[in-house]
Amino acid sequence: MSFWNEKYRSTSLTERSWTQLAPGPSLGIIESLVKDFGQAIIDLGAGSTRLIDDLLNVGYRDLTALDISQVALDELRGRVGEKAQYISESILEWIPTRRYHLAHDRAVFHFLNEVEEQRQYKKVLLSAVAENGFLVMGTFGPTGPEQCSGLPVTRWSEESLTDFFSPDFTLVESFDEIHRTPWGSEQNFTWVVLNRSK
Ligand SMILES: C[S@@+](CC[C@H](N)C(=O)[O-])C[C@H]1O[C@@H](n2cnc3c(N)ncnc32)[C@H](O)[C@@H]1O
Image 1 (cartoon, helix red, strand yellow):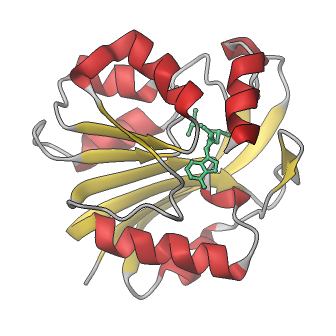
Image 2 (image 1 turned 60 degrees about the vertical axis):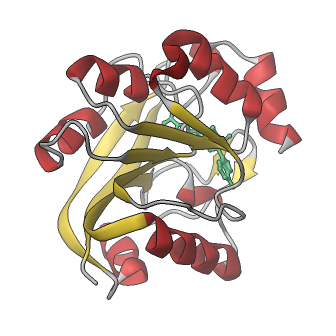
């Protein structure tokens, strides 16, 4: 936990590789999937993402940000206050107390390199995502970086992500994205939209 707190404490927005200075694909995907602004959406490993601000601006009312870093969540809360809900916990230890229509994960799942951690993540998702709900996930892709913030990552393809989450989730859509860091480096991301099929 202290690694990520320290990372957020010691860097500004433009010193974090994952910062999106221009909006990424997440907002448009979520708008296309969730037509009812009252439906529950959770961002897993949200950090201090501006996606929450954007979703609030569009009109979504039931937004939760989960992150292992309290510092990151405090930064987000400093901007949007109590319009969002916050869960300060590791996704691997989280016990969901309600179900969400959509779970979003950008650049978090790829930090789980052990099969046991990946399985635990999936188990948690199965109790967090409502039947017929969605998982929108972006990870480093096959030609993406091998590390982020000095930590090793697992790079995923559309096929390997789809295989891993099947048969409980089925593929709706997948695509590649090039994320440009605030200092101009390019990072290959794989995105999948998965439907909780049972
Ligand atoms: C690369 S950042 C991405 C942040 C955010 N999703 C975004 O797109 O701006 C990774 C985030 O995952 C969080 N994180 C790392 N491991 C986690 C875990 N086990 N449970 C919850 N959050 C975690 C970190 O604190 C950090 O905010």
